[in-house]
Image 1 (cartoon, rainbow, N blue to C red):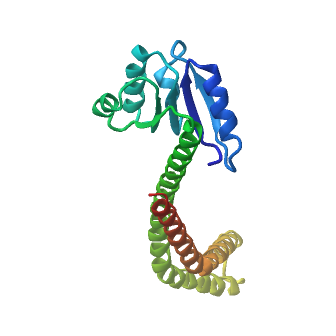
Image 2: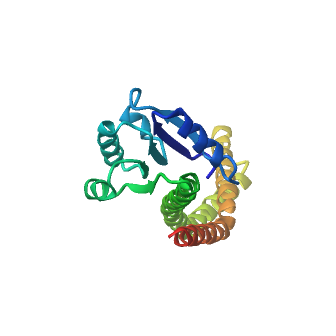
Length: 226
């Protein structure tokens, strides 16, 4: 839950203080952003993982909930006077909690579950992106491994012929001998570079295993949160 943000939209400073203080007694505490109905800006909620709406004038609630729904921000509305059936008919995705004696416990418990699920989904998406990147790298690596043998055969021929030419020191002009020597040195460098690919297959194997384990862990975390 580290790095997650909870937006609290409330005109009641007391409710906001009580909610933040109650949540800070939990083991995992998110960061909080506070807005009231006067300073409310729907765009400011885009970076929030969860929104909690409480203590607002009834005539301003609908517009704020509608804005949060349009941004796909999971929202908990602490219902005071608005009828639940009216809330559910107009805002089917908004989670509601009745404002009773235990409303703080209910909101923190529900909010923590929502944040855990958001975190699991986020990790699953990151794992999917990582797996796609690993798959592309694996395809490139496989191509390079397949081409390595043919490249090495051609490189061996270049090295062998360059070495044979360098043995004929008396027959080669000085300038040509320097050019052949350059070809020989560059071929050696290419040979050293190709030797590094000998460990590529093992690295690809371990990268694939790591990606599979990450995907499995993210899936299990998501399922445990459902």
